[in-house]
Amino acid sequence: MRIEKDTLGEVAVPDDALYGAQTQRAVENYPISGLREHPTFIRSFILIKKAAALANRELGVMEPDVAARITRACDLILDDFDTYRKQFVVDVFQAGAGTSFNMNCNEVIANLANDAPGTYKPVHPNDHVNMAQSTNDAFPTAMRVATLLLMGELAPQLDALGDALDAKGTEFADVIKSGRTHLQDAVPVTLGQEFRAYAAAVRRSTRLLRDAATELHELGIGGSATGTGINTATGFRHVIVRHLGELTALDLRSQDDLREAMQSQLPVVAVSAALRNLALELTRITNDLRLLASGPMTGLAEITLPSVQPGSSIMPGKVNPSMLECMNQLLFHIIGADTAIAYASQAGQLELNVMMPLMAFEITFSIEILKNFLPVLIEKCIRGIGADRERCEAYYISSPSLATALNPIIGYAAAAEIAKESAKSGRPIPELIRERKLLSDDEIAAIFTPDFLAGQADRT
Image 1: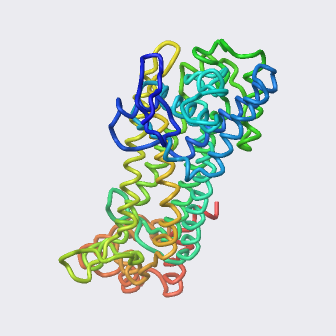
Image 2: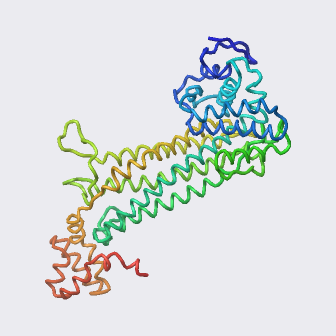
């Protein structure tokens, strides 16, 4: 151990640690979850520190050698992140606003920038690495940047899911089946129409998520402690945003009112809400797929799912919708995370929202689990879905609701009689029509097709 000092006194820090006294206090004060900040969030914080050093050097308020040492230290972390990640040891549940994590970053960078850990010369974690910044503007900026970077990874996976569902819509375009409303038989649809509707819902939800994320491009960095820009050089807010945009390849801009950027975390809440709405839609679709695949003998069994693992430790041959069950669980987590973010957002008081560490963890974790699982779901479930065409046809052809299609042809009263007889006898409606000679065989053949029964909306 080595002994370091902060404003509260001496602290024993592990000899091999690149962090310092304030980080060590956080380790001792918050031994809570064992969870650490998301790697993209850590990298975003390091990029902010690098951009700040570049901006301060450009504005002539930081010595070139100090700025160079800081930027080199940041590059070391970014270029060999797996090696240095273990130095960011503050629990995700920590002191308000994220001061502990900010100082964790400042101390690691300073110790890498100096010749020996714990000396803090010539680079000091507060005076130099944190120069012209506060936790209060650095933390929300990192939260926005990290969310944007992760969104760049999630959005293509969502697009791929929409494409996979659309492909099934094309594959199943000629599979007529009984529609269901109120979980009761309704007029026919095609299985392809159901899947194309799922694809449309995914695409709409993804578009709304992308729209919400546009607000994240406005940053409050340069506002310092309360949004007034105290202790920053003139123009710092714009110069650091320019450097940060170049480092991240993101279209970033300084927020008009930096006080608002301290007080309000609405942009993050908007993305979380859009992510929740996406999760709700995906939950609905996932539940539908599980229902359509229920069986194989006593459920709907209109579709088949790929088998990925044995389904029971006691029932031989049982196979479950395992991929969809996993999807449900992570979607429920995303919905719950949004509730946590909403509560954290409204807990902001006066010039600062101190609940940002919770928000940062929940938004990044939610995006992470969804982007990680979507490719697996697509490959091991969606693309392998099959249709039981015989089962679908047997259901729709025996449903009394099929008589609805006859209303404009034989009239409502005659169609009602046919429906009642079908429900009572269990005989298919086409058979009863043929028996009563209400329509010719050619007319019956023309009526009971996907185009006539389920394609009229597509012709208008």
